[in-house]
Length: 419
Picture (cartoon, rainbow, N blue to C red):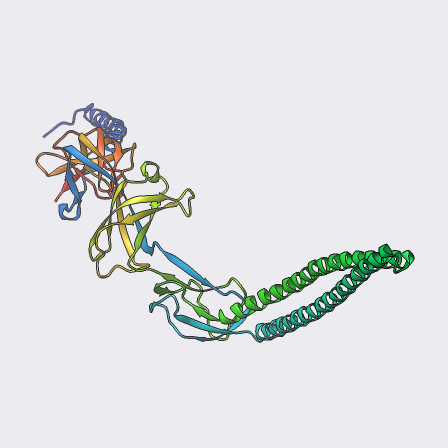
């Protein structure tokens, strides 16, 4: 028969208390330890990633922009006077010559004004002819009067000479000789006055005719202007090329005012590219840099010819002059991609440009371990950037393999497992 020990129960209670205290003391330590454990590396399918290796060598710096092909030589066709569109003879996309009638306008007011100007011109021309005839008649009358006075002067001079001779011989009175001499002298003065009158009248005649002729020429100019405006109601292309669509096309029956654009003619064989370059990338672009334009049906070489000084919607327009034959599909307003070559960098460390890789910035990338099973996050400093490549300043070595894909969903992980 077992006899229970008196202190066994007490020791058992103490042992249980010590175990409980130990468990309670371990709970905070376990909690802290678990909180400090790093999350398990998530798995990522390697086939869904975009990896690239760090290289050293020549790196071509480029910028890229979207744009369109536009004609280098264009001309707007404006309305020269107010009118209403009666008909449109040529549609956009049709080749035209300089004298091709594109559309016809009507303007009853201009037709009436042209007739009024024509009648006013004819009336002024009639007045000019009437004045000319009147002045010619007056001139003839003055010349006839001057001739008569000249004849009288010659007669009086002969009479005076005769009376003077008779008086000298004592056959006539000396008084008669003096009277004849005075009469001849007076007629001589009148002859001089009439000659002056003829000269003055001729100058006055020329002045009157000139004044009337100026009026005629003024009315003729007004008539020619109206007639020219009337002729221009038949709107002509004025330029060999292709008729282009206006941003706001006009329609039959529409009333237009002078200066309203009615059409646009361009030469489709002389095109240039207008590229929209981000304002942050345009600082290194300068005229003369080589460029390549991709029409999606062929590549065209060119060079930068102009940089717009203004910024619109965060982009700057850069004109690229094209050289060489155009692809068959090249036409105005065709959407294109353009790449401008900035410079060639020699002996630099570079890698493919990550999704969020910007020039002169620092980012965190996942570097793939040599075994290829895991990738660890590293901080990388970038330098100069191109379209598809970027210079590595720090954080990577030649031969390192990194992931360029968008890994923002794994920002909370320092390590990933590659499946």
